[in-house]
Amino acid sequence: MADMTTQAHTAARRRAPLSRERILGAAVALADEGGVDALSMRRIAHALGVVPMALYKHVTDKNELLDGMIDVLVREIDPPDAGIGWKTAVRRRVLSARRMLLRHPWAPGVIESRMKARTVPTPAVMEYLDSMIGTFRSGGFSVGLVHHAMHVMGSRLLGFSQELFRDAPDREPDPDAMPPQEMAARYPHLAELAMAVAHDPDSVVGSGCDDQFEFEFALDLTLDGLERLRDTL
Image (cartoon, rainbow, N blue to C red; front, side, top):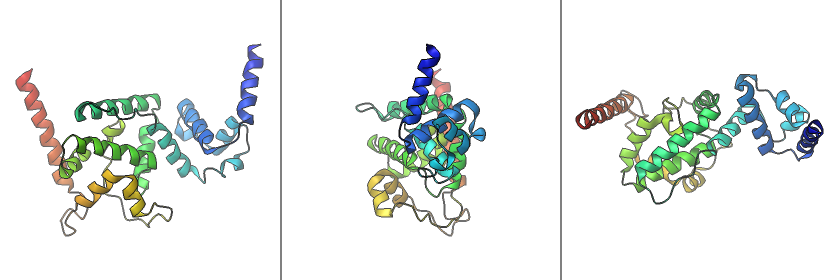
């Protein structure tokens, strides 16, 4: 009887209309089972009971698949809590992001590699970072201090420890990228940060963020925190 029930559920799943959401959900499940390196369009198609070519109507290639999988995971992070202080709000969301990554241990490598490869983060990552910047701004942080805080936090905002805010290498503009006006309207806090924090193009460290300054800022912040703990513990 159990076998018949399982077969009925499998048949029902395969009769459901194919969609981008179903493909991404199946891809995440397969990556959880065997790691992202073993993921293939053929395996996803088999899990969904369709031919591999059917997938390409919804995802054009492996990179688009990985980007979509990242967005699925980021949307698992708890939404911001209203009516609490900035510090508690940030801490709760970062710890929620870490719980998400513990459920999907393959994710940090994919997030880091795709963040390096893309000119801008995926939509869900953009929404998440924008909301986190908004939390800092609502907590009384200046735009400049938010900029440094984002460097200090780095990928800890997404639950692991790598620098997310490196300068992107020169690439051709993405023809499918959102127009700047639309991007500013959708991600106002990111737009404010990008417009307010400008760097000297003649700087010896280049036109992007001053890596030495950001390194020393994070170092001093860490040392100040340790000193505070030493004096209170």
